[in-house]
Image (cartoon, rainbow, N blue to C red; front, top):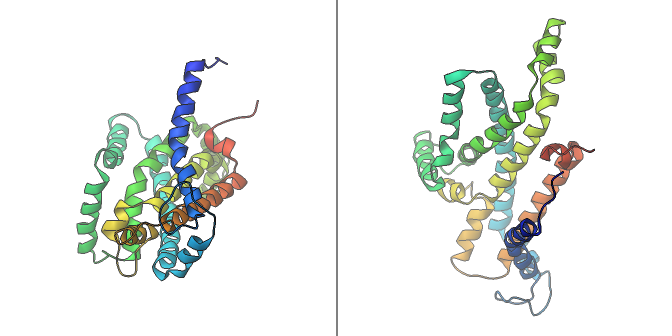
Length: 265
C-alpha cells in the first residue's frame, strides 16, 4: 500500500476540521441556558429541547419529515435500483443516452427544480400535500442514488443470473438469490444518502410545503424569520441523532465496511 505523505495528511485534517466544525458549534448551543446565541454557552440546560417538543409546528414538522423521508427513500431506492439494473444490461448509445437523461437534474440548480416541481404538482393538484412533497424529494434524490447503485453494479456478474435461470429457477428466485446479493451494498448506500438528503432538504420543503405538509426544515426557517435562539441548535442535534440512528441500522444490517466497499484482509 502506498504511504500517504505528511502534506496530504495535513490537507485531509484541515478538510475534516472544516466539515465538522459547524457540528462542534451547533451541539454546545443546543445545551445552552442562554436566551440568545452565545458561544461558548455561559451555562448548560435542556430547556431548548423541552421548548422544541412543546412547539406543535416543530413536532408536526418532525413527524412529516420522518414520514416523507422514509417514503421517498423506499420509492427512490426501488426506482433507482430497477433503472440501474436495466441500464447495466444496455449497450452502446442507448446506455449512454439513458444515463445522461437520468443525470440531467444534477446539472440544474435545485431552485429551478423546485419551481418546476411546484408548477407540475399544481397541475396534478398535489401542491402543498404530503404526496407532492414525497415526489419532490424522489426527484431530488433519484440521480444521486442511481449513480451509486450503477457504480455498485459495475462488478455485477450476469453469469450467476444466467446459471440460476438455466437450472430452472423462477425469475423471482433468480433475482433474490443471484442478483440482490450483488447489489445490496449499493442499495444500502443509496438508501442512506436518500434518507439523509430528504430529512435535511430545505429547497423542496420551502416550495412544496402546505398546511398539512410542512416538514421540519421549513418550520425552522419560518421560526428563524421572527427570532434566532439556541432552539435552532437543538433542532440540529435532533436531526443529527436521527441520522446516526439510521446509519446504525444500516451498519447492523450489512455493515459500514460493505457499504464503503472495504474488505477485511
